[in-house]
Image 1 (spheres, rainbow, N blue to C red):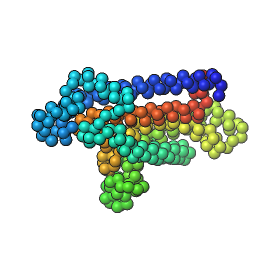
Image 2 (image 1 turned 135 degrees about the vertical axis):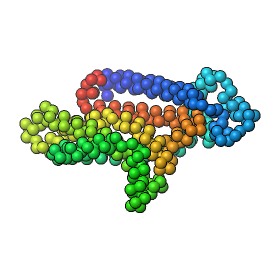
Image 3 (image 1 turned 180 degrees about the vertical axis):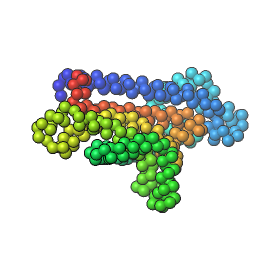
Image 4 (image 1 turned 30 degrees about the vertical axis):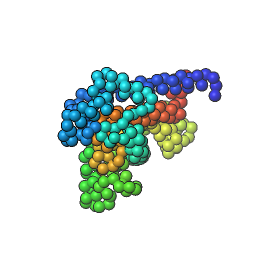
Amino acid sequence: MRTGTRGRLARWALLRLGGVVFVLWAVATVTFFALRLIPGDPAEAVLGGPGSQASAEALAQARADYGLDQPLVTQYAVYLGRLATGDLGSSYALREDVASVVLTNLGPTLLLAALSLLVAAALALGLAVWSTRGGRISAAIGSLLEIVAAAVPHFWLAISMILLFSTLLGWLPPVSVPGPLGLVLPVLTLAIPLAGFLGQVMREALLDAMQSPFVLAARTRGEGDGGVFWRHALRHAAIPAIGLVGWAFGSLVSGAVVVETIFARQGLGRSLLSAVQSRDVPMVIGVVLVVALAYMLVTTLTDLADRLVDPRLRRVSR
């Protein structure tokens, strides 16, 4: 690798690292103070939630044990100091180390998000190819399907599929169970709306690519319709879709909160919802930080993939 290339790569990596640190600090700060604005006493979460009917003495002891009796600025400074050392703290409600709880729930959510992304990409690609190569009727049907799929809310889609595939047909379990069958409905619930959005982007990119000068040049060299489409137009159409992967990952994680709750599936989304309801501040911040870190990792990999697919981006970054 040449010296100039290594220098550009090092500068890019340092900028990325600085951006990651800044975003994690901002996420932790906003989440910390936003949770303090929610009505209620965080000490109640330590003692089992608002319904625990804990005594005033017990609440005072819980505040002292967890530093909740200190000024808010002091609590914030102490918490940032712990985060700087990698300590996410202890969950108020679960009485367990936040890092271990997050790691336990991270795998199921990442698996759900990754499978949903793959299924969404496959559906979007198939629909985009079919609608651009099948004539006007196919284009109209494909466009309608993409719009409907992108507009469907996750909770409505989940309930509809439970009614159809579990209650009426009895093909699939209504809740997430161990094994591949338990993943089908949660994955489809997350993948179908995303496929609708990605399909619209890919179809427009395919149509633009088929009118581009490089496609005309390929035709003049004697390439047939199939070669032009699969070798040139499809690669061009993949660029905007790859650029949306980072956004798609964030969308899948936010959708996982609904899906994991409806299908009673273990994961970060379900843990986050439970932590917010119980005002479990360390747990909420821990989950949000891990999700933010994963999001930035995905966007970084997406940026690299963009540069590999599109040579123009490599030239611009020089």
